[in-house]
Length: 131
Figure (cartoon, rainbow, N blue to C red):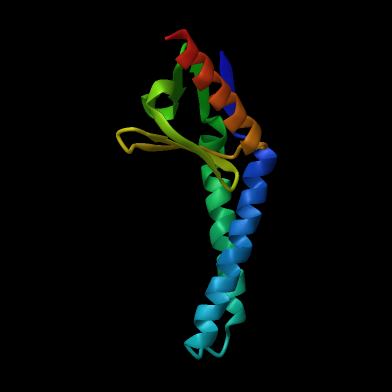
């Protein structure tokens, strides 16, 4: 059995990036709108993402996916059969799983998304060889 857990350092790094983007967008919107205090967008963007990160931290870091016997099992009783996967790709620090039915799942906050993809694809090949 292989387990994919959210990485705490990656979680905070992702939130830093989101914070910078939120700050820039909020500043830009206020500046374009002619607000005399566009700098408040910097404060608001940082505060919003910081609060989000703090509030969701325990829940997001508790998520884990387990891969065993040709099945990926994740949070919320998600079950994805390796034989049903069409695409396994990275989106930032997450690994996206797309099934033949079009269902999409994220294995979020992976320290090394490429390694996660490699492990899943190796298990897919092994599962195909066994059938």
